[in-house]
Image (tube, rainbow over all chains, first blue to last red; front, side):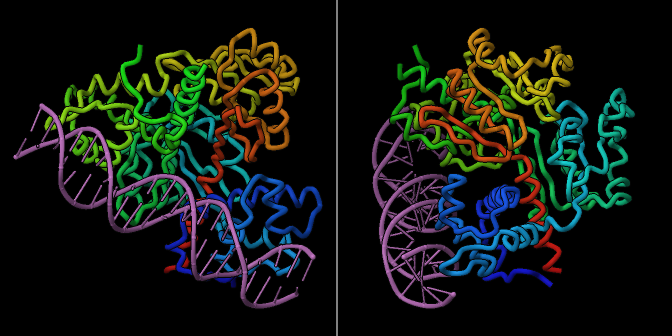
Length: 220
Length: 220
DNA sequence: GTTTGTGAAGGCTTTCACAGCC
DNA sequence: GGCTGTGAAAGCCTTCACAAAC
């Protein structure tokens, strides 16, 4: 039983639209905090620096949530976006690579709060194994990856190894049956079509900013 | 004296092109490791899962680096991309928000290696102040932000506070003269046109993956 | 022969603007 | 009056395909 009706084939919905739904969810959260219970797309756009037509179009992919002449009911909108994004189900994460970034994400609230839960952190370097992370998880040996994925019902694999081992970790994850991977290693990992891989390279953001600093200095 | 000539107004170059230059740089790094010294756009595309026309077009914004019939000289390409992105200058970062993410980034190699250097980490919570981070930096009081920005010649401000304080930290950074900001708080911060703000919301990636897991389960 | 650099085409995304509804 | 939902327009990005260069 769903609270919303899809208007279009979900496979045709752009990742950009999905990413924006997350943003809208943050906005709606803030409106709830402030105690607002009805909001128009214009008001949302004005408050959070968005485009009202885009908000309406994004939401329209999933049904008709609004009331013409009135706007959207904030708590209903919240419920619908949560359901669309599947945030009403628990998602179990396994982090592979217990370096700085891996251990950090392990206790980063965004990664282990509400419906997301880190169920393990692995490394192949024996000197890191058994260091208890501040979150209370032990670092385990990555040779146990396959076993752990099954035992702990991992939904999402997170790669935080150096570039050199990322592809092999990805292969092991796919082999173990993981179909959804978040990769922080600075390399494009390859996986079968059926596996969803999302890559995030934090250094790219710094390098982009560096480019803009360079431009700024030239224009002086 | 620059190693490359711009063909177009840099302001018209898309951020997507700049982000890809970072990716190309990683690829070129790997080619250098492997000892390859000439590469065609086709070969680059094949090896790293890219599009050859796009590589050529991206590079063409900044000059003519290739030799027709031959390809690109790997070390020259490396030098040029480094220069375009401004990675030949030191970039000094100040992190504000000494929670899990902030302290993690502080010793994440991508953030404090080569030309990027974390010169300070601040928090307004007195219980966090003076905890030495593993990188050896002390957490300082964020009331000193303006002073520290000037003293330590900060180039890039990094916001790792909760959403609720992000806008105020951003305002303080702008006030202190920082023109380039990387924001990890899950909120769109507002800044004057002259300030470049890049936002990264790690939770969005998880929520996107969660959406795809939901789709997958429905289609069963 | 090979490969670059690039106009043109195609595809995708955002924005406009208004009919339809409250 | 107001606001949503949406076709059409505009804008942006990627890909194709080939002339120019080696």
